[in-house]
Amino acid sequence: MRWNWIFALLSLSLALGAHAQPVVSDLRVGQHGKNTRFVLNLSQKVDIEVFTLADPYRIVLDFPEVAWQLDSTQASAGLVKGFRFGLFRPGRSRMVIDLGGPGAIMNKFLLPPEGTRGYRLVLDIAPTDRSKYLASAGWPEAQAAEDVSQEPEIAAAPKAATAKRVVVIDAGHGGVDPGATGVDGTFEKDLVLSVATTLRDTLERTGKYTVVMTRDSDIFLSLKARVAVARRAKADLFVSLHADSAPGSASVRGASVYTLSETASDREAEALAKSENQSDVIAGVDLSKEGDIVTSILIDLAQRETKNNSAKFAQMLVPELHRAGEVTQKSHRFAGFRVLKAPDVPSVLIELGYLSNRLDESVMNTNRWRKRMADSIARAIDTYFRQNKGDHKADANP
Image (cartoon, one colour):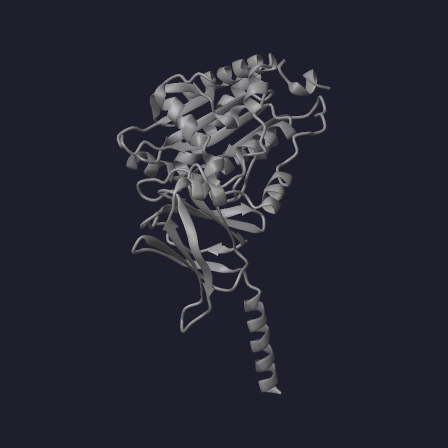
């Protein structure tokens, strides 16, 4: 009888293990003659969809949701210049492989377990010319339709006139898009999520606000979806949190605030907006079906008031950020950030500091700094609404 129990427990354990979440545990890249071999170690056999995208050249691997246990070091060799991985949608994980030029997948196969090694996905990538690459690159039709269908709806019911002010906090990047990486390995997506969570808790404790997070976990969200969250919530204010990086200027540090303008205040602001606007491309998002929200917004007269209110809030933020720590010399800048383009929601993007500066990175990783930063942003939000009592969209849009 005792052996029957042991056998039953062993069988149950094996059955549970067979249905456990798949794990991606190792990665190797090497050059073999002109070709590049990319190998992923998997704990179990899974369905993997592989396709290529252009401009920039990249290979996308879509998995069912997996647990990532990879070293964060960005391995590179041959055509492979780097890679990113993470949760793309609930139930789906994604890896994006950056290519240094057009490359054709010559072989794709899954090796079965052997000895102590589990399953191994092998990709052999060979150099090709751009015309051949473009002929085979593109989105699987079924997946493109799925991606579009999962974008959040913009429509929402009107808020009651007595509703609390709605503040949407946007933790930048996430999932397959890590954002900037600090000199000591901090991922921007992790840092800003921790600050966003602290800010949410700070605002909710006042009892004056309804706080909505665009994301509260390590998941990817497109720029279009972030704007849609703010509009769907009928937000009174949208605050997007990021951390900057200037690898060529390691001494630069401090926080800064950005608001929307199609004419950038300076070259650095323009370069930063261009970089942040690439988040969807980095994560492998199909942009072919997205409308141009810029054109319709910039000709809308309502956008003028929104921009003015965004600038007012930015002016209140700067001295508060100074109280929390260092700020840059040009502390309020403006450029064409896509995430700030909701036509009816005052919006700012806060760069909390520079991950390329070792001191900034170290300070930003402390609970004390995060609390001080959250308190400062919360005070600026209080001041903004106190001085704009008559500007409640719940009253303006019954």
